[in-house]
Length: 335
Image 1 (cartoon, rainbow, N blue to C red):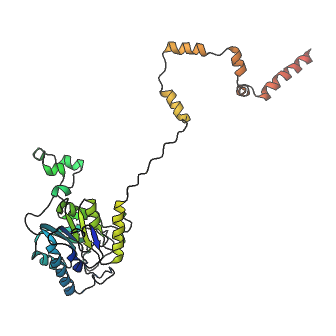
Image 2 (tube, rainbow, N blue to C red):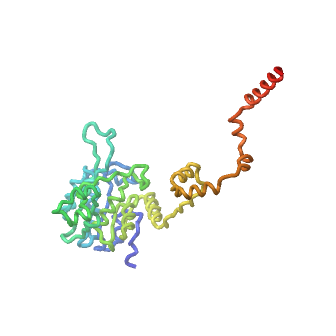
Image 3 (cartoon, one colour):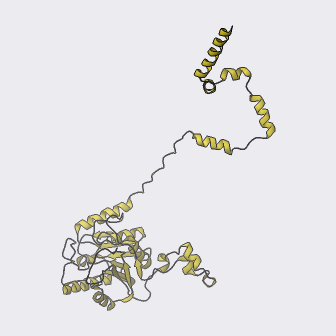
């Protein structure tokens, strides 16, 4: 079959693996290559000299671009250290639409004392020709109710940007994935799904294919699958390939529905009974009088049911016993 490469992540070098993919079959290249900052990805791809790194970058760009459709696009994550040179390489082959700044929301803790701390990544957005695919409505950000009300002047009533949401612009403030984040996998430079899904929704049609030459933890594949697109990619490190398999398999698991336990039946509290009695409306005066006469106890009933506690309260034994004896004694003496 000609589409056996679809929805696959190949654990191999992209430069050799790209031969699997037919030319002109990819709608979007979305990739996050090594930044050449000396990180250990299980190989030396991030530990090259500047010249070797730029030469290698040009190699994979020239190998990947023929795979794009004529109206295809490319997003590339870069560090500011090499983005100028790589942007020049891409500008010689494509049209640059945006330089997007990803604000990682890094907290102000320590950092350099000889320069300003770097808290952003650079993203380049490139297209092959003017009729490139781009769906802004799919990635608009809705206004909250308060802001929408504040901007609802008469001249804006019915405006699409007000009703549907605003353009995300070219400054994306999305928190990096800290170690405790539920989305985090065991990869040092994992990108948030929020960013990748925005790119996929905006620049890949619903029936399109996304290519990532450096899959890492597989976020591009996850985003494509969640958004209903196909994907293909490459990852050189076997450990990261295993992580990708696990993350993709997790998407296929049925959701666990936890049933709420049935509420326990409890007897009404004394306070609730009293409150209900206070709240309940009184019957009419005649009805109250009739009910009182019908339920009035007889004298025998009162006598027989008189609680012993009343006797105790009214006349303690000490006082009741003392008076009669003293009076009797005095009377007999007089007699």
